[in-house]
Length: 406
Image 1 (cartoon, one colour):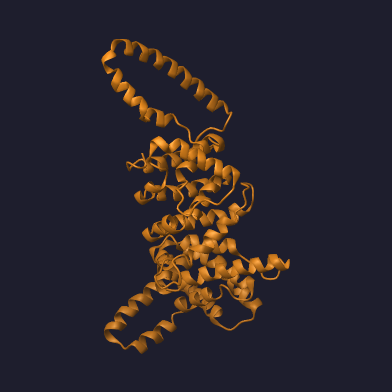
Image 2 (cartoon, helix red, strand yellow):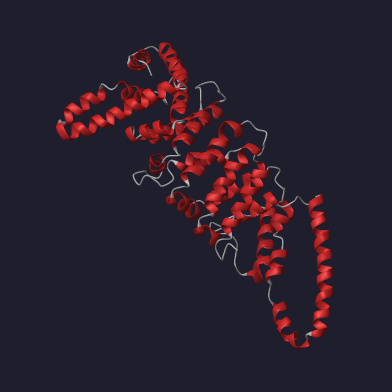
């Protein structure tokens, strides 16, 4: 990187720091947006952060705190990107959206994103609060019928959040103990998914849904996030499972990666289905009838629907060629096994009592043959995507790592 380029970058950041009209500031942001895709500009910013941190260490040993703050304020990189972050959520929606786009390009670089999160401790909070404000504005606009009152950019805000939540510092901020409630930051993302259209062709999935799924997958790397979802948001988690059938192929892999991360947590396994196999069939049929009739909401202590969602995703549709073929093959196999069993019984009269006892219970083979009513009626597979099928099978394998899951 030459001195001329470095000088130009410094001048651009100085322009950003000056008091400008909205139109002039927008032009500065447009230039920054162009530079943000330049590798030299990224290196310039990284060097600026690194120099600042190195200077801080030396000053902590040799100089007073006042001198450290003075040098920190004169760093155009630190001060310029702080200004960029502060423009997010400004009254002029154009400035807020353009600043967000610049930060998306910058945080795509893992090193720079880490440095920014280290320097700007409130970065995650600022972005989450802005997301909430945009949601509130969107609701007000819908109620008032004025869609053009404030330019909104929820989609690119989610894209930026999906970038930074790959880093531990951002995840820790999402679940900070200083927040009013544990789900203070996570709730807006969950609400957006609740409102997701049940149409795979809807533009929502490209503009918002894809990034929401990435965010949830990122934050569930935190044990507290998983515990929170399993213990306090099981209804929400089950509603997310219902979305699987409505996802476009673009969103299936992120969703299944989120499901895989949850399936790998053994604390989820006891929440799947009842373990009393003698009563399993009656229980699930009763639950399915209640769901079909929609007479009442599910109880607060409901089972996790992850296993059913995966089975519906993989299992062939009712009346499909695949399922008819499977039934025919199973019937032929049963007929052959019955014939062999009759021959064995003639030769093993001494084991009749033992066989009667086994018939009183539900054998392993019978349990495997039993098809859950929900899967029987609601399956929509097999998934067209090879990647989707592979990830779903990985989820089932993760569930099978515990005795309860098996």
